[in-house]
Image 1 (cartoon, one colour):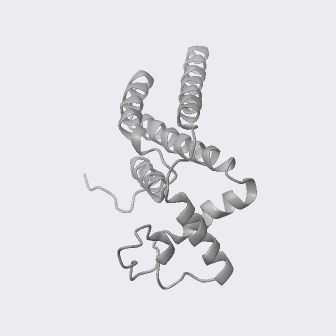
Image 2 (spheres, rainbow, N blue to C red; image 1 turned 30 degrees about the vertical axis):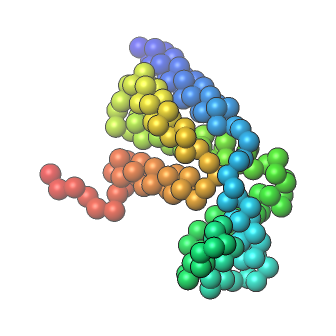
Length: 167
């Protein structure tokens, strides 16, 4: 009996690994977002000044309109994008996006398994979420927000939430 459970766990881990690899390969593509350049410049500015600029003038791609009158709230993401660009050039940006998307869907798989969903349902639900998310797979701050929220949901599913439900 213990051998069957061990084989089942191995098959489940193999399915999860195949799913994450498939998501990684499916999301690996050119970085075509126009605002990546603004974000890289803003990240460079933050690193050079050792401070967050008071106005996010470089994140505002519309020259006819006045710039935002607040700092860029996604300054940490901009620093990350610039650091990736500085380390590996433009060729590393699509790989970074693919790793972040694969991490997101690996966490979604883990969360679905934490609520005791069968592996075949995990694949089905994850695939549907992937198809819905497919048009939004860009190197944007929302990707990091989605990863953070998925971690919070998983934290709550594991019973380590910010509050305990009273039964």
